[in-house]
Image 1 (cartoon, one colour):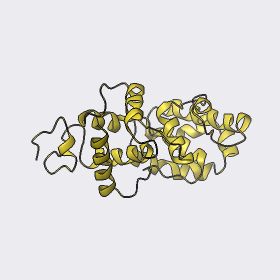
Image 2 (cartoon, helix red, strand yellow):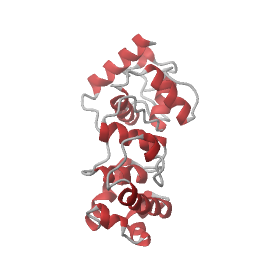
Image 3 (cartoon, helix red, strand yellow):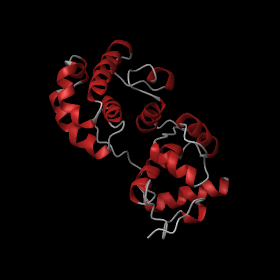
Length: 210
């Protein structure tokens, strides 16, 4: 397994030398907001929505003091906009009142924030704090790691723990970013491009698709 993991990581690094988050942000709390908006929504859509949102509320204080109904109007196209707008405003208020205006740097405190689950917390820890062992188990990660035989099942927390056990901690966050890119380009959910796939030698479910 160690050799397999090393090979997959090396191949992904060749394809995607820069393991960057697809969401656009400048401030730590903006990443928190963008990740919340990305739930059941594409990163591309979120990146279209956030410039106007961040321009309307350019500081954490402004976002925390925003009317939830006004935030709803900016994020409506991301889906589940009422829940997302409420979580964004309440989380920003909590950052100000309990965390000194900074996104927390540990899992326990992150999970206390409205709308923040383990996937979001791991992404924040990996991208903002370069925390070793941060594993972001989104749908791409679960699907592809299952196909590669690196994990089993579809429960995000279980897959997270399985991957923590086999991924080098210093590689885990970047690995997850690269897996997302690979899932969009090649190993798609419905019609994976198996022929010519650079990870086919490790795949347990290679299909003969054009």
